[in-house]
Length: 177
Image (cartoon, rainbow, N blue to C red):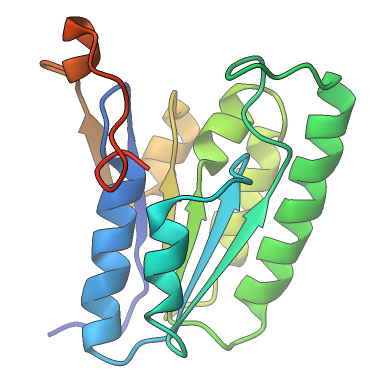
C-alpha cells in the first residue's frame, strides 16, 4: 500500500460518468475515514449527488460554485458573470486545498471550465503544482488539454458508445441527476 504520494487523477471525455467516477472514488475514500472535499464548477442546482453527499458528513463537504453551464440549458448570462463565478470558486477551492484539512479534493467540471475559457489552463496547472504532497486531487470535465494530461498520474476518458437520449429518453432522476 502506497500512501506516500497523492495522485492527480483526471476523468474526461464526451461520455457520461466523469462526476460519477469521482464520487465513487470519494465513497471509497470515506470507507477509510478520509476527509474529502468536492467543489463543483458550473453546477448550482439540486441533484441526487448533493443530497447523497450530505449523508457522508462529516467526512465529505460539497461546494457548488458558478452560475450554471455556459450557453446550454437556457443560459442567458453574460460570459463575464460566469468567469467571475468560476474565479471565485477557484479561489475557494485553492484555499481549501491548501488548508491541510483534506485527504481527497475533487474539482468537478474544472476541466470544462478551462476548455470553455472560464478559467485559464495556468490556474489548473497551479492547482496541480501547489497540491500538498499527500493529497489526492481529482479533476473532471470535457476537453482536457495535453499539458494537464502530462501532469496527471491517471487519466481516464469516458467515451459514449450508446446513450438513451438517442431513443428520446431524457435524463432520469436518481441515475443522471
